[in-house]
Image: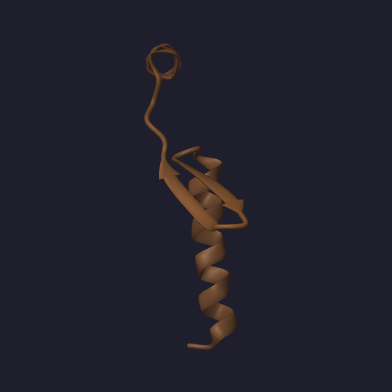
Length: 51
């Protein structure tokens, strides 16, 4: 595999996860921090009503 293909696949996967709002990514001087978001009570209620 070429390096460009690997980078493209990684970027596409990251974009999909960000689109679904599963992860929060913070970039600062210290580095990159990735956190998995937990659904709030409001989000759970909203999703259950809009199934």
